[in-house]
Amino acid sequence: MSSPRPAASSYAAVLRLPHARRTFGAALFGRLGYGVVSLSLVLSLAAATGSLPAGGLFGTEFAAVSVVLAPARAGLIDRWGARRALPALALPFASALFVLAACAHAAAGTPRWLFAVLVAAVGASCPPLGPTMRALWSAMAPDDAVLQRAFSLDTVAEELIFLAGPLLVVAIHPVPGLVLSGAVIAGGTLAMVSSPAARLIAPVPKETSAPLRLLAPEGAGVRRAAAAAFGMGVCLAAVYLYVIAAADRAHHPAAAGWILAAQSAGSALGGLLYGRVRWRLDAAARLPYLLLVMAALVAVTAAAPSLPVLGLCVAVGGLLTSPTLSTAYLAASRLAPEGTATRATTWANSAINAGSSAGGGLAALLVDRAALPVCFLLAAAAPACAALAARGRTSPRGRGREPLRAAGAGGTQQGAAGEDVPGDGGTRPRSAAGEDVPGAGGTQQGAAAEQAPGVDGNPAPTLSGT
Image (cartoon, rainbow, N blue to C red; front, side, top):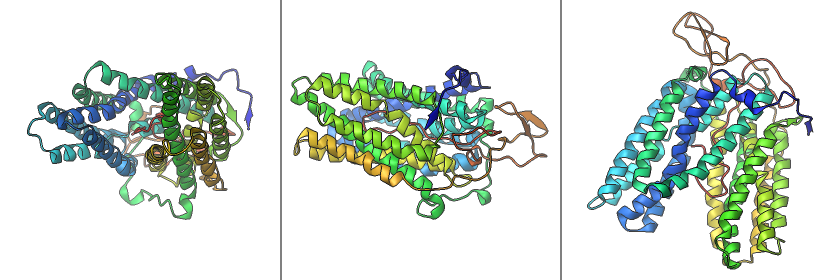
């Protein structure tokens, strides 16, 4: 499945790409807000209403609205381009969060319906910084090896952000956390679109924008990748709850935090190592194998005789988390119909979030009704079934990679990847999400538009890569 890594392979090479550090730094800064906003929203509204269940319901509303409308927001990026679409989402998002924080701070006399309206506005306008950043990685990377390392680096960095976010909420306060989230996401978005690299995602006229129909034959590849992502979401959310239950039954509840931290560390390490390998099989072909190995590792956890052994099994399983999720995103983008890569990978991200919600709910029903070994085996069944759903021969887009061109005001400009960019008098610009990419087994010329939404890599059920 793989070949030896060339000596020149390096994550430093990713950060040496033109404008990469500036763009990636701005995107990570903005995405830090997503690590803060969910917990801040639940806790601040629970305090404002005097009801933790009410706060939980508002958190569920935020997640549901964000996930349901995620493909539509990704469509705006495909259609309008990054420099226009991202600020158009980020500024209303921040404004709604600021008003929500003010209402939560006032608390007294604020009706719950107003909270519900504001939460819906926040969820509807989340700017998709993760998908956009991966589109830009695709445009800037000169070949598939660098692109794969860029995706791995991005995935691991985002996972660390989602680990740090709740710590910020604890360090400050939930209501200031809402303000911080809005300011950080808006500021990161504006800094990101100010980079010259943002021009690489150019607007596409509505009449030439292709639809993405998951149930149609051309959507089969995206559908399989989304099914794989759903299975992983179910598994990760279930394992998260079962680890907490196992630690509690062993009379060492604090051990759950250490075990889950080890799982996240394993995921980060696995993601970095995975990105250094040059694979012969493309992402869609690798995905079922990764899912089956993940299922086997979770199943082995069911036989753990003690809490330390269980922790070791969970940590080893974490090595497959980031690689499997990032491969699902890559497969979705690789098999997406022309001009729909942003929406395709957003569907995969939405599937992870939906699977996480479903897995968490199912695990909550089972944890007190079945033995923990049985619960872990059922959790392992999710990626195993997803592996079957991910199998199939779906032809990737057939054209080779072409140089990505961005819109200019006229004449010739330099694009973020270093190539000349025609102005209005030159070639019609193409969307970064509309370029075709080769498989992982070879290098072709041009910039790819293979991109994926943000992956949080978290075992906990949470919004990822919004």
